[in-house]
Image 1: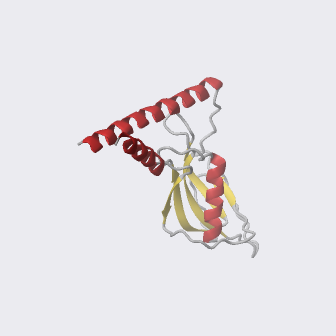
Image 2: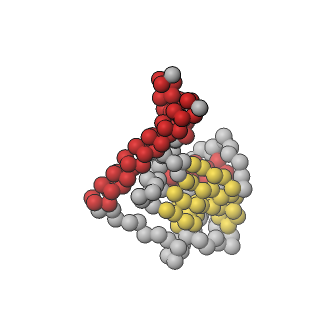
Image 3: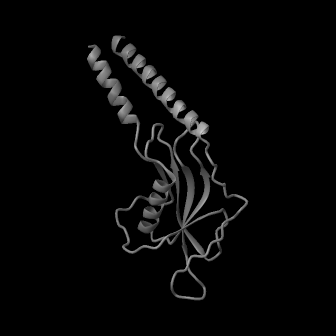
Length: 172
């Protein structure tokens, strides 16, 4: 009986965790079609140009125990989603850098279709809005050690708590 509890606990931990970002799509549904040769510009700011059409928005978050959720992975997800919608600009409105409570890069963004006024070809021109742009934090070796230690302690506490709750549930 004890083995079943351990196996069940491991299954619950794996089921509730994920290796990538939590994706919340706003104003559109996930599509399987992708445009080949798609050129997408990624900008940070909050001002949407008058010539832009908003095709949808997205929130990339943390699933609770995410491993592969760096800023580079987030940009890949944003560009892929933009291409599938036919957008040529991703405008990152807010971003949260990895820290003590989360090892993920998290952001909110809009997908825009920007047409250039002087050409038939799409030429996205969006300036970064410095008032909302977050500057990257330089992490010291001490900060990185604290983050790793916090992740280990949090994982251990989560496992012990989960195992205890499952064991109590199986007994009762």
